[in-house]
Image (cartoon, rainbow, N blue to C red; front, side, top):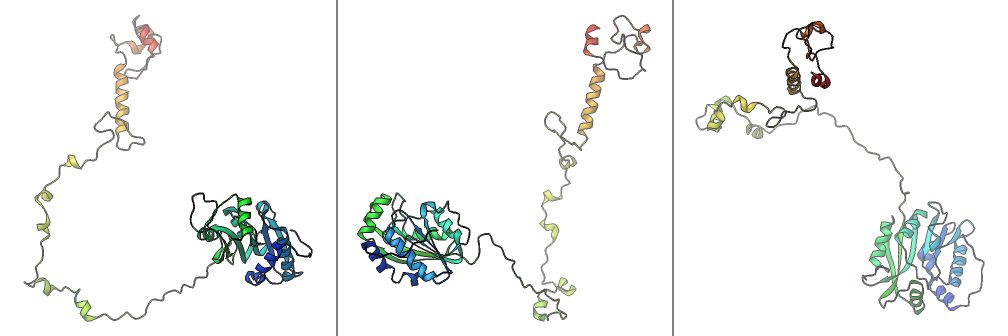
Length: 336
């Protein structure tokens, strides 16, 4: 935050600013006790900037505050949220400031709810390819996207020779269709991210004690008595006539059976099979293992080594009961 002491104004730029800012304080709506920030850059004339600070200090008084911030340092500044009532950017004659989306978002952040932003920026009268200088419509749209409301264009002026020279020197931009536009926007009367409980008045509907009256003519349209059924003039449709001969055929039970796991290809049980295929495959696997076991030629293999032949595959194994499943290793089978 910078403050300047009163000084004498003799420069042409300062005189030009005095003419432009005669009604500026009223247009900006600045009053005593408000916190105001002036955004400037290297293109802003120093004398005009000092004069604006002095004028604002006289309006805001001791209870107010006037801060001066370079736009290149605004994003790195330590300003807290909702710090200022009024922001003035590029309003000094001779300034050539372009406001990026990040700068506008930061300005909206440091504004107090209900605070206003006034900015002046050189704009193009038509859309150009380079996109460096916006049109007035795009500038208003950028303010809206930054979170401001009631965005409107206040005035458009032709650039003075000093301002044209400032644009060429500081922005490196040359164009014959530039204008200077002043735009304002207001921060909503709430902070970003704030919440409020909605008060909904939903009255409970009481059940009617008396049933509404029914129009007899309307009720008669939906009544069908037994006499109406016997009326010869009433043409009823037989529901059996709506069926085709194919509908009357009894379906084949095989066509109603749901396909089992792995039907039409090699049998393979699904994970967590419930149709019984997993148990069936397990039995087939066990029977294959049983059939692959060598069969005894003498029938005495189960009695033990004393009764076994010299080439018996069970040689060296303990006795077992007849019919008991005995698994032989590949080594035993090869030795046999």
